[in-house]
Image (cartoon, rainbow, N blue to C red; front, side, top):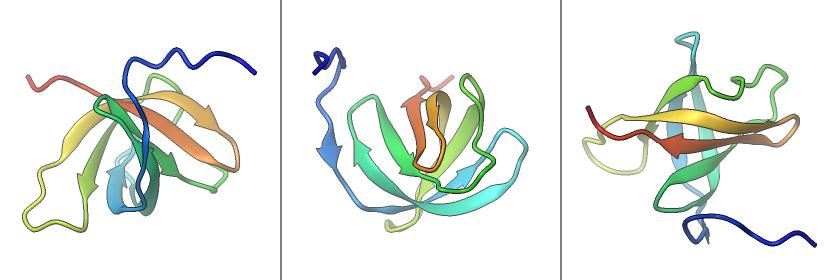
Length: 89
């Protein structure tokens, strides 16, 4: 088993989000877990955003959510993508 070198602790969270991918396509999907730095999003479809693609994610289960920009750090075919939040500009 490899050591977990994550900067932030992960927490399981099943929450609905809207993802706007690098091509501008919208997806309504669910989170698997989150940390202070990002999320893992469940996407079982064939065309996942590639690593280093900038995406936008918006929480669907809160009132008046603000979109958050993020970068894809890992894409796992048949499972989903790991994203890291980008600092606000």
